[in-house]
Length: 96
Image 1 (cartoon, rainbow, N blue to C red):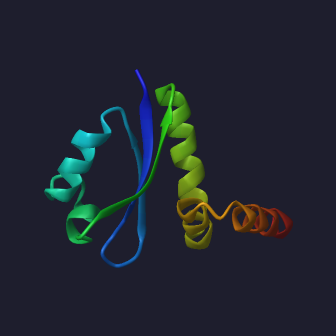
Image 2: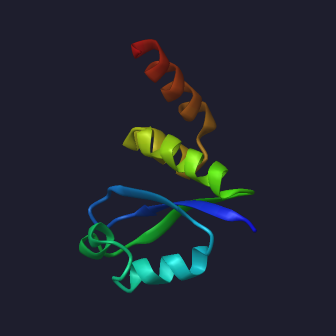
């Protein structure tokens, strides 16, 4: 069964990253105000990005990776700006 990692854009412009095995149901819960306290307070929500993975372990690993990214790096992924995504990745690597 596939799992999904998703990024919601919240009403304040922040991003919320999670994983689930039932994306439509989970999104419905968030939009209806039953997802989490954070998403309930940050309405309106829009799905900015999602990707399908083959296992829960892989989805959890990807969720953790995306959560560690800066706002700018998440935006580059969402917009498909892979050159900027690579540039931001190198910049972060050099700082470490």
